[in-house]
Length: 499
Picture 1 (cartoon, rainbow, N blue to C red):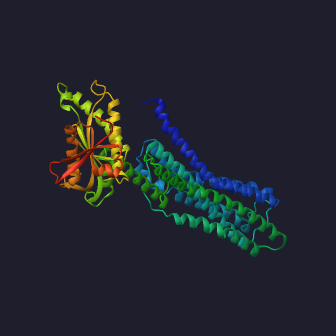
Picture 2 (picture 1 turned 90 degrees about the vertical axis):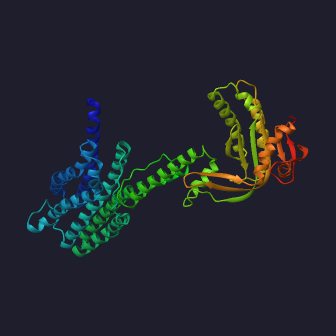
Picture 3 (picture 1 turned 60 degrees about the vertical axis):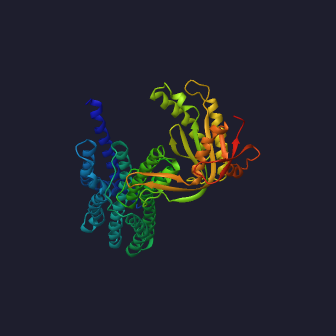
C-alpha cells in the first residue's frame, strides 16, 4: 500500500472529526454570542469574561472529551479498524448521545453562572437575578442546548451517512427512533421557551428592570427559536427532499438510483425500503428485458404482472390477425453453407422482419425454422389490427428487397395473413410453460402462407383480413381455394404489386 492510499482514510477520518467537533461546539458559540449581548444590554462587560471562561472550560473539558468518545467508533470504521456492523448502533444514536453529553455539561455551567451570586460569588457587576428567572434560565437554557445539539448533530449525521454511503457503500439498518418524537421535541421547545422566560421575568422583577430583562429574553428567545428552527428543518427536510428526488428519478425509469439511509426513524426506514423497491424494479426490468428476448415483450409483461398465478397469463379469446412468414428458397440458400453462415443469414433476416412487425403493433410469438408466427391484437390489444398486419407485410417485403443477404441483392419471403377468433393460452407443466394462440384462424393463416407457392405470390391474405383492413380495392381477388384442415373453401387475395 502506498503512502497516498494510507493517508486517504486518515484524512477522511480527520475531516469527519473536525466537522463533528464543530457541530458539538455550535451551542456554545451561540451561548457566547448570547452572553455578549446580555452583558452589553445590562452594561456589565466585566461579567462577560467570567461567563466565557466558565463556558470554555465546560466546552473544552466536558464536551471535548464526550465528543472525542462519541466520534471514536466512526473514526475506527473509516480507518479500517472496525466493521460497519460494529459501529452502526453508536452511529445511529449519535444525535441522542451528543445531546445528552451537552445537557450534562450545560446544566452545571448554567447553574454556576445563575446561582453563584446567591452564595457570594459575584461575577462582575451584574445584579443578582430573581430566583424564578434563575430557575427558568437554567431550565430553558439547558433545554435549548440539548435541542439545538440534537438537531445540529442530526444534520451532521445526515451528511456523514451520505458520505459513508457514497464512499464505503454502507447504510443504516437499525430503525429504533421515531420521526414524530423529533418534531414534538422541536415544537414543544419553540412553543414554551419564550412564555416560560417571560413568566419568570414577571415573577422576578418590576419596573425598568422588568422591561430590560423581558425585552432581552424575548429577543434572545426569538433568536434561539430561529436557530433551532433552521437546524431542525435541515435535519428533517433533507431526507424528505432526497426521497422525493429519488421517487422522481424512478418515475423517469432510472432504476440505478440508491439513497443513503441517514436516520434511524421512519424516514430512514422509508429510504431503506425505497432502495429495496428500486432493486426489485431493476431486477424486474432486467427479467422483462431478458425474458422478452425469448418470448414477446408483451407476453413477458403479462406473465410478470400476474404474480400469484404460477407464472400463467390469463387465457383470452379475441379476434386477431395472424401472420406466418417463410423464406423462399431457403433450402437452396443454405446448401453448402456452414452453420455459422446459416445462423448469420437467419439473424439478419429476423433482425429485418421483427422490428417491422413490432413497429406496426404486432407480437412475434414463435420462430419456426426459417420463418415466424406473429399476431396482431392478441396478446397486445391493437385497433385496426388487420390493416396493421397488411401494412407490416408490405413493409417487410420492401425492407427485405433492400437488404443484402448472403451476398445477394435481396431475399424473398412468403407471407400468409388471416383474421379470425383465436384463444390465447398458457400451456405446459410446472417446470416449462409456453404462451400460444390456438384456433382454426391460426391454422388457416399457416396454410395460406403455403398457398403462395400455388399462386406464385409473396403476400397472400384471407378475405376476412382484406375486408377488415378495408383493402379490397388495393388487393387482387384470386378466388376460393381449399385449405387443408379447414371446413369449406377460403377466398384469398394477393396483396401488393404482382409477383
